[in-house]
Image 1 (cartoon, rainbow, N blue to C red):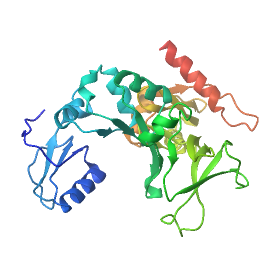
Image 2 (cartoon, one colour):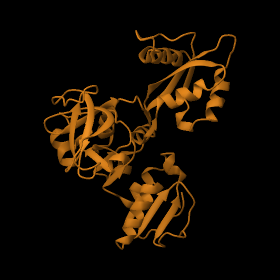
Image 3 (cartoon, rainbow, N blue to C red):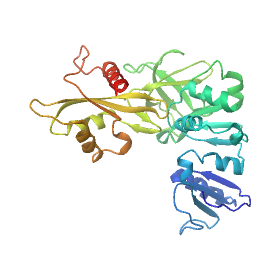
Image 4 (cartoon, one colour):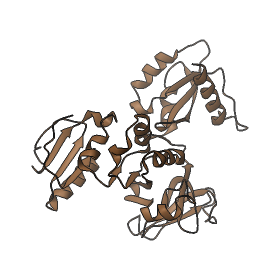
Length: 329
């Protein structure tokens, strides 16, 4: 950890990236001093950025062992990270006093397991407030406030919070587009002045339900996307990469539960008659064609898939096979 000067700063941003930099630039535009703490190179000024923005290399943040350091040092009331970071903080045995300044912990980018949120609250006494949104929706769509958590946290467990002011939501039948009653599962549609033409409903790929108080539950994705620690994986992209190997006849990719990342991809594959490809060879092949987070954590060769009545590989059955194979490994 670098030796950071002890004088106070107006704004501390943990984790740079495009959003962090944008926040820092906006902070300095308002006359504040911004300090960005991120995995990178220590510099006191960067060409093109204001000189009152300072960047510090803190690999320990990524490793979680050093995560509480900025919180202990600057004592913010609010911190935030993907759900996977909550699991890492719990697993690292971070002492309660290290996060004692926090009033709430905000999380987004990936589904939050309610059990994980409960564990974090029981361990640290800090409410975990989830937000739901996406870049294509120009930011947040729904989220928890502290008053809502105190009033509804127990009865709306698992919700991503209430619809944000100025944004309307409804649940529709995936096939017909007909709006469904409160409590029914369907596709989420949104309407707001900043979305599309400001008048039409915009359909998402998220399966959801909503109640009369405008609390929203996200129940999955219609496109079967796998959210690995905040990174979106489209199974068809991985299937196509596997099937591009000359020895592979057919492949199927499913989401596997993971305590830290929420979901990870697992895959089954069939080889062509008279050909073979071992798991290490196929994994190496995929690493040259996919980003690291897209590469399946499990690759299982099968003689054939258990199939649905429409003769497609059964995803639940493949998931069970992968779980069984993982338990025997």
